[in-house]
Image (cartoon, rainbow over all chains, first blue to last red; front, side, top):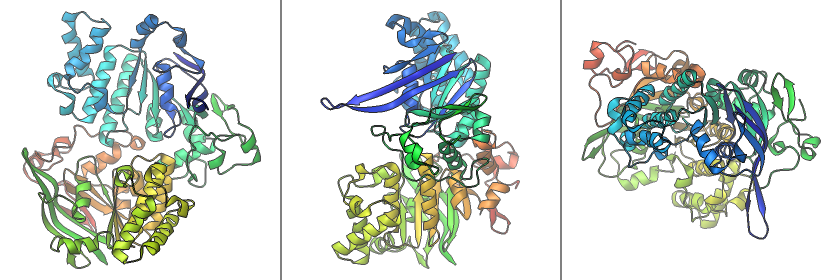
Length: 313
Length: 310
């Protein structure tokens, strides 16, 4: 369904002396129809940029994205507009994703109107159907976003997305602004909807616990690059990259499976404008040796679809 | 020995729409060198409880009950006396370091300010002490960093500065409000490790919604729902044998524990349900839960629960 091939995005700054910020650097992955890829990493690792690139909200520096066999970056404006309804995005903060001056019902009707999917007289019925599918009450149609809770607003966002009948949904931290008990409601809803409508998800999150529940495959990113990618079960039971170990033990506050000690990384992620030479992770890596400072490791397959970028695997 | 004892504490905000009962009849105690976790979801009143303890709420707020700290009722002393307690005896690490630090003041000076005020040190000595504090919270090259401004610090480093400020006057109790909120996971682990060292020598009240952090740091945990405590026990008991349906629901809704949501949402603190405040969301709710408000009952030694069916 989605194939991302050597996707790269550099942002440049400065007029005379150009400085480059390598937000996404040579990232490749595939997601099959009806499956979920969890994209995990800390702030500034480039995970959101990938989402925005796929939607063509920003222009890539290099690389290709194939959606259902169509090269998204080669599309003309008008062709792109035709494809857009099929790729939808959910953002982190539902309150700012909705127009505060539009009633919920109008908000949901907006995409139906814009893309002329459903004739005017049938829109009302479609809206009530959507409202019900996402677990809201019919009376919510006439309310404004400020009158609903964060969880309910995220349901409205989901209803808007369902209105487009999309194939691919890019969810960028969809529950990180919600309380845990409400987060569970939204994640369950997303899973149910996926089953019902055969959606493909790119699920962007910093929370490994959430990704574990949602994703079939996981890609771990560090400073613009994938350092480990594999089936969810392989990542949780047999992670190979030291950064993945650190993330896993940070989530549970316990050592990762197969590791004796909880890994607490020293220091902080360097800024993406001064990416270290060699392995990008070497400055914080507990296993660093000389080769790591010189040579950038490639992603190597360590078993069925499980790839790791580390010199010591 | 008990360091802080809160009895029948109530904090109400009068508003045009009605009275917001943010903190309602809370009984709680913290022993010396104990780490107590106060857990709850957005809007349950946990931050207001912290601010009430520090007496940092505006004067229109109605506060009743007693807060006995080392034998003194903090609600009865004058503002001048309270000022001597703040920072020196009880310090608060506020949530969101970015907005809690003064953006136009050097970090070292911000820490030195409290030291100068409380310990009567000279300007130079307090600056010296501030650098020591930055070093204690493991900020690299502290004497240089002390001269920088908050915007030159990352989120994790700012949180370290907040902790350094909290520790500056060597208080007996620290109230930390969401100390790991908004931090990346690997940075969160570092801050938890630092807090663990801090709690070796002093008592701490950690206000958080992050159960992982609470589990790693706390001796006892109190769960708050709609302004009141619903369960209160040792950390082990809370995780291994929770009794209140809300505690069970909260644990069960974690992705790691099966992602079973609690239906509905927390009530508004202006318009609380009759009877048990949790009953509209509770699967075990019976007739009595709709009518009568359950009291806090000690089920076994030190394990308190607010539920008719526990």
